[in-house]
Image (cartoon, rainbow, N blue to C red):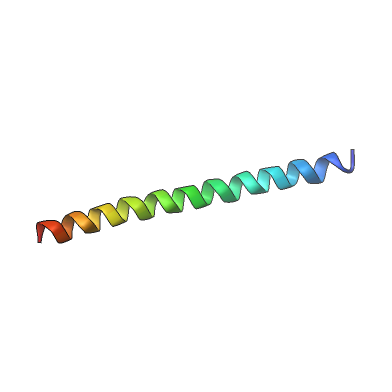
Amino acid sequence: MDEIVPKSCWGVAAKAVAGFAFIILLAWLIGGAETAAVVAAG
């Protein structure tokens, strides 16, 4: 049981970090697209 808990804990932490990074990347891409649109319109 002691070996299973750390693995599941690391799995949850890894998924949380991956999800957080994905959200930041998505927001950056959307922000970049908006900036590109503004530059193209300007």
